[in-house]
Image (cartoon, rainbow, N blue to C red; front, side, top):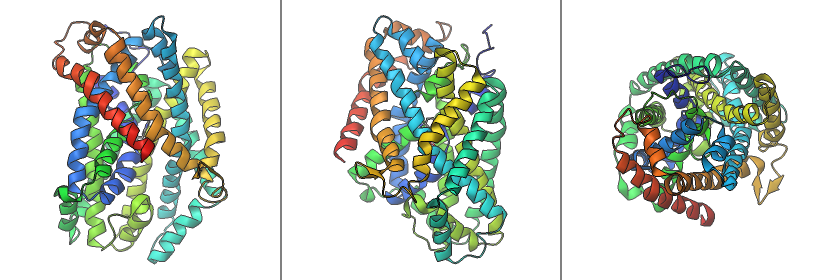
Length: 448
Ligand code: TRP
């Protein structure tokens, strides 16, 4: 029997926890606006293609590294890199990425809490479209409310992490993920029964390749990456908690299916409603915070659906912030020998110290720019366009070209007890297809 004291207690627990890490603001907030700006259906098809060809193999790669090394990102590269200590730098890059992503991600996560409060207290009710936009800008440009909500979100996440891998992460994910799906389905039914819904479905599902540009293709690739939380060690950390008897291909495939399903369902919630009420599907990042409240205001019982929607967005964000904090805490506990609770408090405070600059990037610190970008935009760009693709590129080189092939096969076949089906295909994608795709994303990120 496997020693389960360290990690997840079941396959379903592992899948739900990792799917929780993957499903987040990226699916419900970022995916719909990216799709909206890139013409709809064709973007969806290209996105799904990349998830299968690049996303699943990369996730398997992270799981192999995590489960084989049984340690945090830095420890993983130390153990598996053998005498080549330089690989540890890649682990350190993962820690830096987690800090930076968590710093700006927690800002938008905090916004969801504010919108839950606004919906519950009826403050968005019956506002004219101008007033809805005004509410969003007044709040996001404020000098203290964004900080308070960000702090609240960090505290909530810290609490779950302090409770541990099994009692915190696994348990919370097992409760929240099914709730997330149910709430999403409720919202889908509401949206699909609006008159005029079919126009939104056409936009989402009917591919019009004439609308796709080179930039759109690359954005689909980048989005598949961001959405599956790849390239900075999140899945390495969770991989260490996956039981030895679980199949990594199956686990990765399930996570990718859940993640894409949530993104598609979010599209089914948003686009029929947007079209039914004559709004602009290319509304950009404000689609969720400005366009949707207007939509809710135009429908019967909109206030209730508004609460449901923002609670659901908050849940999606929480399971992701949990996986971000766990990267830092696993590192502090294993490498620095801190206690779990202390590690979680110190890491959260550090993130708050940096993240405060992100929270204030829309108001008081709007003029405070580095390379012409606010701190929020800088962290977003640094991680999504540089650190994640570079981290992923070096990671596939590590496992595909440096680490012995037999070791990779052994981990995927669970020590030879399973037939490592599709191993040849995986190894080919790992060694050739993934690196080339990543180099293209990187070049695009640098020149674009
Ligand atoms: N996948 C998350 C989302 O879709 C965002 C994300 C990117 C992330 N990298 C991560 C979450 C690392 C946790 C850990 O919203």
